[in-house]
View 1 (cartoon, one colour):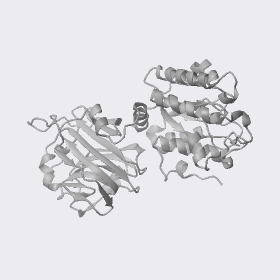
View 2 (spheres, one colour):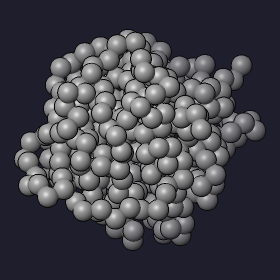
View 3 (tube, one colour):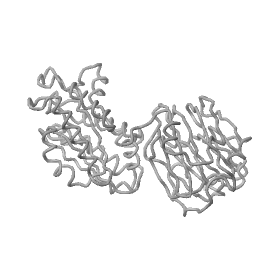
View 4 (cartoon, one colour):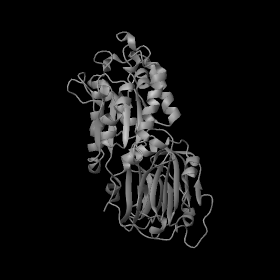
Length: 432
């Protein structure tokens, strides 16, 4: 079986292997047993050979692989760390990126022990820290200090027989003695520990740390367990009238999650409970009907466009309502995650009663910061995309997004939740 095809998609997990934890019959160290901390830009041909240190990792049955990197391209397979048997075509431990997704592979003589990719993607040109921890309890992927995927597999370095090659930036095997799966971009650090780092240690080692809720959203996206998503708001979320029969941003998001992320996500349900004319007062009053009734795992709230034009809802009331809604979401059973989305910018020349909308968007940013909530900031995105003014080309009436505006909202949401793939139909869609 040619491994490039295997690396292009997540394989089925083999039965879990029960092995002793840690390095066999040896005390665990505090620091890494392999620690390469030389920042280097890899050009798709360069690599760093660490094979002289293979003995430090070869016998590990549990531990942690950690890497800090940023990409400059989206390749089918790019190696962060590979420890392989160079005399065999299909024996390695591989941590890397595949089409932007984080991937961890363990194979021995073509027998796949684990081969899994995240659905969340990290080819955004920013520095990220990734980690994979393996113990008798299973395997956990971390991104930017937060767990994003958990598997039952316990396969690690000791699973691979004849391991003699360790490389940063490439993999070596009998069919590619000069290397394959070369990395393009910067790698700042690659380390291996003979123990499972704690979540606090992984956050301390990360160049950036996502809010905890972001990690939970990523876990939901990467999990095969069904999840309900509630997207609520006013007429913009409702998608009423001004989409003229085209998809709203919630419908584009639904297509991306429920279809393009794979068959196991078909059972995720995206429910749009946006109601034209709604304010935060309204959502507080009917929260059970518009949110609780759908047993959500994630609740997105985009409100403010009507609040700003409602005299009884000043910024103080708006702030209090947002905090109340965040608390109400988090109080739902099952660890439900709130997501706040600022409203799009509007044409103030046509809608003078919305001149303070930017202030309300700032209030939402402040609430998100104070409450540790995932924020998708459309208002800033719309203004910066058009030199500081609302892009009227995206608005049907100066306030409501048209079909192009809804796609613009959807692409921002998809990118910020790290599931943007330029090869997908939703993400590559353009509207004339």
